[in-house]
Image 1 (spheres, one colour):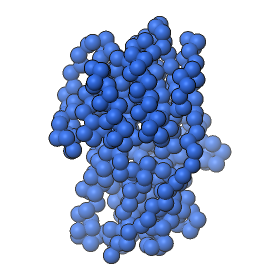
Image 2: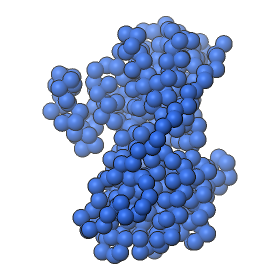
Image 3: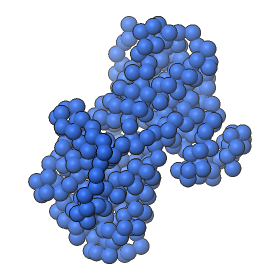
Image 4: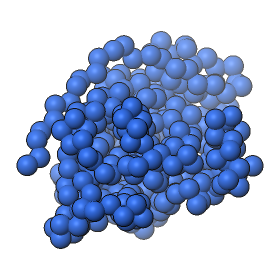
Length: 375
């Protein structure tokens, strides 16, 4: 019988990281708020009614600190619209304060990637009271009532993770393998969608006794350090874990670090998501089974296009809708397709420009890159 696991709550001070600002003389530090910031006037005074973006943190995934702000910034600058990009650094109260600040400064559109439903809804409610449209970015704010949602097909992401894990377990000829699940944050609807997807694929294997269901736990706030502690407890209770469904590359690496300590890395397949440099390196050396590539540029470009049109009062038709499981309302959904990545096609991620060969193929991984024909 599966035993419950106790998550260790991580404590610590949040750090502030400042992103590169635009060359228009504006100073992100002028806001007086903590959190990463990229600001541009786009030919107008900053805060005079542009597009406001609030990102969640810089700890759970590299994308929030580098990839998303870079691509959003480029799209807004190309359209010559004023914008501000801020990062709440994992602080839910700061998330709400940033929303208040942007609205007070006259933002005409908000794009938010929430930390949880409550703080996301607070920002959306504030915006709605002022007649300002909000785009949920990457994560749906449950019962939030955003005007639009831009993301990937997240249940499909989970299915791809499970299909990859099944393939890796079968290739290792594991007999009735024990599969552990290291899920994302319970407060993130995406984590629920990922889990819906991979449970849909894995459950028939459990039902038919081809696989054994092992420990299954959410990791608060996608915290990788906490994920490492949780997985260490999982291995203590189930020393013969044979496979790990880790919800993203950060949690996958947390599991891999524990497996390395026990000389089990490479023998125990681990999944991931986000196609981070670290995740791809783990795949190249055989410690990680697969990841899921979600082209952040496509997602950022789609959200930016929608926001720019809203800013210019141009209606944009959206074909898909997603039902909010809490409110029952349907949110117009710009849905994008994810791509599974294994050692066989890591090269594709490099060729897309999402990561560079220089960053990926450091001295430690040069040989593995050469074998994968990455130059």
